[in-house]
Image (cartoon, rainbow, N blue to C red; front, side, top):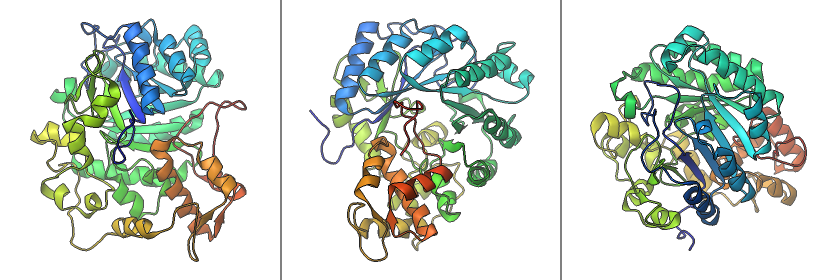
Amino acid sequence: MAPGADVQPPRLISWNITRRCNLRCPHCYLAAGVAATHELTTLEALGLIDQMAAAGTEMLVLSGGEPLLREDVFDLARHASDRGIMVVLGTSGVLIDETRARQIASSGIAGVAVSLDSLDPKIHDAFRGMEGAWSLAVDGIDRCLEHGIPVLVQITVMKKNVREIPAVADFSARKGVLGFNVYFLVCTGRGEQMTDISPAQYEEVLSYLVQAQAAYPGMLIRARCAPHIVRLASTHGNAVLMTSAGCMAGRSYCRITPQGELTPCPYLPMSAGSVRHRRLLDLWTHSPLLAALRQPELRGRCGACEYAKANLCIGCRARALASRGDYLDEDPWCTYIPRSQPSPAEQGARDRDMAPSPEGGSPGHVVWTEEALHRLDRVPAFVRDKVRRAVEASAARKGYARITPEALQEIRSQMPMPFMRKGKGDGVDHV
C-alpha cells in the first residue's frame, strides 16, 4: 500500500536505535543513559528497515543515545544500504577508533554526523560529562575523513556557546567536512531544565548563518529546528539555505524511538503509534496526529503569517509544545510580526505555482534539458524540489535560459548540495 496522492512517503527517518549512552548531556531530548526496556530486537529492526524501503524511505539517520553502543548497528546499516536507503550515523564521535572507522567505511554508511559543542575542550567535556570527550570526538572526525567518510559537524546553540558559532564553523571548514549543522535547542527531555537563548540571539545566529554560507561555499551550512530561516534566506537571496528552511515533521520526516514509537520528530514526543503493533506505512498514512501537521490549523502569529499561508514555514511545532503546551500555537522564538501584504517569499511561491514544470518552459523561464533533469533525479526526493528551486534561482541570477549538465556543474561547484550519495567513483555522487 502506497501513501495517498496527498501524502508524501516518509522519505527521511531518524531512528533512535538505543537509549544507551556513555555520556550525560544536559540537553538530551531522549534523556539517554541506560538502555530502554524492550528496545526493538535485531529481527524487529531488520523487518522495520524492509518496511521503510517499501514505504519509500530514502535516507535513514541511525542515532541514539549512542548508536555505536548497539552491537548490531553495522548490520542494520548494511541492510538499509543494501535496500537502497542512504544511511547517516549520528554520534558523539568518542567511540570512533580505527577499528570502528573501518567498520563504518565498509558498512554502507554514507556519512557521519559528530557533535561538537565548543572549541574549548574543557567546556565540551564538562557539557558531555566525560573528560577527554573533545579530543576523542576530534580524533573520530579525523579518522572518518582519513577513510574517505563524509563528515558533518553538529552543534547545539546554547547560552554558553552562542558566541562560538563562527569559530566552530571556521574550524569545521578547515577540517574539510561536508557540512555544518546548527541545531537550536528545544527544551524537551533532559533539556527541559535548560534555558534557551533569547529570540533576539536566535535571530542573530540565523542572520550569521545566511552570511556564513557565502563565506564557506565548499561546506553546506544548515539550520536545524529553525524553520523560519526561510524568511532571512529569501530576503538575502540565499538559495542554499532555502533548502534547509521549513519543517518536514510529519510531512516527509519522522522519528522512531528505541521501543518502536513513531513520532513526528525527535523533539515532538507525541506518538502516532507503535511499529510493533501496526505497519510503518499504515501509521504514517492514517495517523490523525500526522494529518494535523500536514494541514495545521495554526494559532497566534503563526496562524496569521504569510509564510505559513505560502507553505514555506509553519514555525517549530516542538518549540510551541515545549513552551506553550500546544503544538499548534505560535512559535515564541520567531520575532517576525505578520503583515497583510504578500512577502517576497510568498509572492515567489505564488509565482512558482504558476510557472511551468522543469520539463517544459516558456519565455522568461529557465528550462531544464533532459540530461540535466536526469542528474537532478539523483537527488533524494525529500529535498529534490528545494534543490531544483535553488538551482533555478542561481541560474536566473546568472542569466541562464537553459540548465544543461555543464551549467548544473558550474552551479554545483558554487552551491553545496544537502545530500550524500555513495557512488562508484569517488564515493559521493553529485548532481
